[in-house]
Image: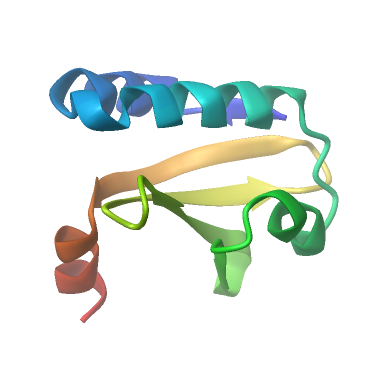
Length: 94
C-alpha cells in the first residue's frame, strides 16, 4: 500500500515520542500490505474500526492515540486523514 500523508505521521511522531515506535511499525506494515478488504486489516489490527466511505480508525498505544485513514482498496492507497489523542477524537466525533 502507498501512504499519502506521511508528513502528518512524522510530525505526530516528533511531538508524541511514546507513539513513535508504534507508528514506525504501522508504516512498515502498511507499506508491505496488500489490503483488498476490511477483513484483511482486521486480521492484523483487531481493534481497528471501520466507518462509512472506507474510513478506518487504528488505535495506537492501547487506544491512547488514534489514526484515521481513508483506504482506496482498488488502487492500494492509504490517505492519512487525522491523528490525535483518544480524547481529541471523541471531541471531533461527539
